[in-house]
Image (cartoon, rainbow, N blue to C red; front, side, top):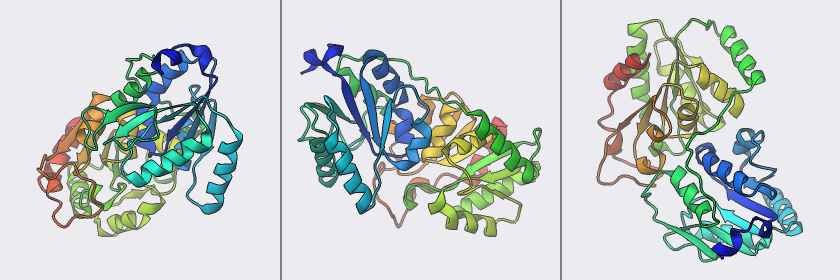
Length: 347
């Protein structure tokens, strides 16, 4: 199959399926750039989640975007859309984390009707693929490299790891107004903190963030702003209530583009292993990344930014995929005092 696909004329339409988060989409951009350069005349369609649309809508590497929504009506609409279209090639971009996710992906590929089906074969779960890129649940390389490996079987070669992420003018203006409304001037030192994460196990304890903020404010009158999405509102409210110093709460007040503009404005950004961490690395904002049970090999931000500092305590049970954990030993050695020192150095 690989030899056939090296002829650009064989492929008129490509479906990329990436149902991951912002970080997953972001790390695919270098490979997408190479794919676009190789299949110059093909129509490239991305099937992704709503939270990733703001990130990808202006990229020239994608011609069309189809939304994957969780609701029943939205899924029926997706069935109708995919069944009407015909793709020569469908590519599974993300790891297949379970056999249930494999069945879901297989059904999407069946609806897409693609002759060629390429993608990750995580722990041999990619039974529906006819060109498979083997991988384990625990990564052996960075996710950027996995994306390149997927496209390599198509004859696509790419090496540039640059994530050409740009903040647009309107989003920058929105953040300028937002910060001015919260008494943050252009010369103020702004420290961003992202206390949330996909799962509770990916979150450094909230009490540690409270202590960290107090330590930073003792050193200097920094402006502290916290970020997050709708699902993290309760976490943000708790952090603000526990803190004895003033915090600007930007949780659920920005879209992805505005969040990018905010992160770009920060002198330092401190984040758990989550989407905003990857945004900060791509934007070259000085970053402190707090890793607990996450897969450091797959998502290490130092692979894309020279301004990233990572705090990580390797324990025997990490990486893991638990949503909840009674011990959280992986976070035990990450002390607020050390994080504060690192942040002050970056400032």
